[in-house]
Image (cartoon, helix red, strand yellow):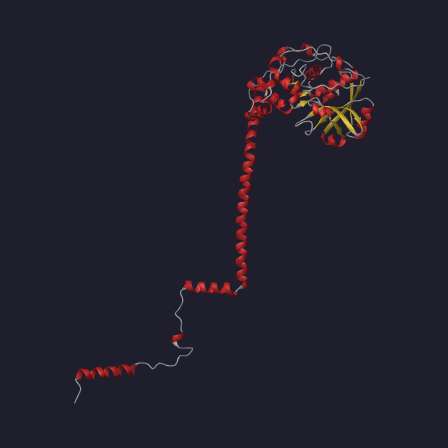
Length: 376
């Protein structure tokens, strides 16, 4: 019997499908089953990078060097930032102090410049005007009331428990800033500074007969109340009169003329034009000395020559650079030489005057020097 038509067709279709199906071959190296799907660009790039990192030593060293350079740059930036912060912390307080001092000094200078100056010349005999004839209105009127906050704080710290400084701390406006700065640096000037408001216009009679001795150069200080308040240029002898005070010491020691006190020598210097904007001219040490009966001769900066002059009784005045004796400029007197050291009369410091100084300590600070004897 024959099969149904539909069943017969299904069987024939199945045989036909099996006949057309490709025969599976044995797997070989070129077979499709060994083929991998194509990689994407990202995967391919990553694979190559991984391959270089794994198999290329040069690439690995270059990468390490790049990272080291990056770390060094980062560390340098951090170090620079730290140094800048430390510099700011260090400089800001000092810049503040400098600006305050500069503004205070500028105000003082402007005030002093506005003050009318009245200078008297030599009298008809060609001599200088003596200190007793200087009018009271010519006493230096220094600018007052401009003391900076830092200066006052330092004074309070140093003299807060001292009853003698109570008036100064209570009324700092009555004292020039330069005078307060002197007090801060030289505690021995306390009495002089304290009496400034009462004695700045008072002229005292000076008797130096007790300072005279054979072969002795007396030790005088420019801030002595007997002459320290006297006018000298735009300032007073206490602040700017180191030159006249040194020449006065030499004149008293050699000529024994008690009228040649520092106030009188300051008047001589001022009336003859030996006072400049920056201090005392060197002409006072030679030309001015002649008017006091002295002969001043410049010496070379040589220890042997200096020691010889002192041994012959010729005191030496030295013009000093900034250093142990001054922050700007100063004059001192060398009075003797013993056992390799000089004795010094510093008109602005008791401590310096009581110390002995070797040549090596002072030679680099000396700008010029003069040896003195009585004029013939």
